[in-house]
Amino acid sequence: MKTSLVIINYNDYEMTKRLLLNVKDYKILEKIVIVDNHSTDNSYEKLKKFENKKIDVIKNYESRNFASGLTMGAKYVIKKLGKCNIIFSNADIIIKNEQDIYMLSSNINEDIGIVGPVISQHGEINRGWKISTPFQEILYNLPFVSRYFKKKFLYYNNQHYLKDLVEVDVVSGCFFVVSSDLLEKINYFDVNTFLYYEENILAKRVEKVGMKIVIDNRVTIIHDHSITIDKSFKRIDKYKILKNSQRYFVKEYLDANSFELLLLFITNKFSLFLLYIRCFIGGFRK
Image (cartoon, rainbow, N blue to C red; front, side):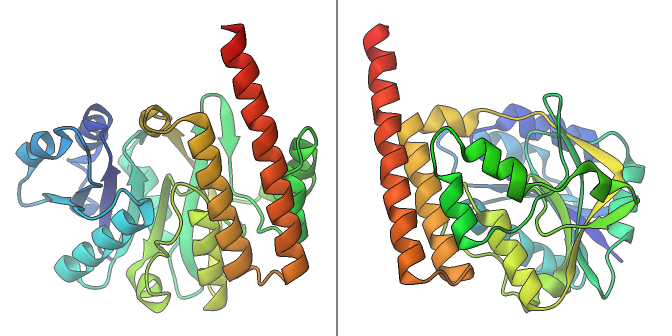
């Protein structure tokens, strides 16, 4: 099966360049596509200089929405290669060797539609998580105790990851491989959220068509987490985006009832109020 790589860039030329130099000679990659996701700097112009028969650089003029960039890249690759496996990657990823790509891609079959690696990020390990219920999402909004409930409900215990391949509800969106057939079945990505809950939404779409999402514990990818987005959004603005995405996911994909949506709204507003207070006190102390 042909394999391609789609890299999403947003104001992150140096990281994208590093990843491109990391993988450009990998023989398994038939095509590398960089989607510049409406950058406000000159990333696109700089990256265009790397174009050749294998590397294409395209620009998403309409949106910085991550899902929009993924969809644009996927459709472009499928048009070029036809049926294939597509690896989606953030710019701030480090891949240890080409064999890791072979291993991840080889897991895709009629039952398994998405494969993620173990993600190493600043000393922490991310190996996927569970889809929550509406009530659990409400609990995650509660100040001071949200971490407890996330640990209790959101994450798998270590015993879950003893085998080479393990099924999970959701994999991290920073790096994963998916079959083009699956993408066409689920009509690509939902562009109605921004920054948050995109992986959960993808997982629910995959669940609907009856395919599996797995983690390959033999492969570890380094997420050298970039702070480009953090520089672009203030803390409160990011929190509002998070909660808007949460509400959309809970309403549209978890089929929450009106009472659950009301509780979600109340806990959102309460936690936002406390965040305003913390930011005010922090600014006052300075």
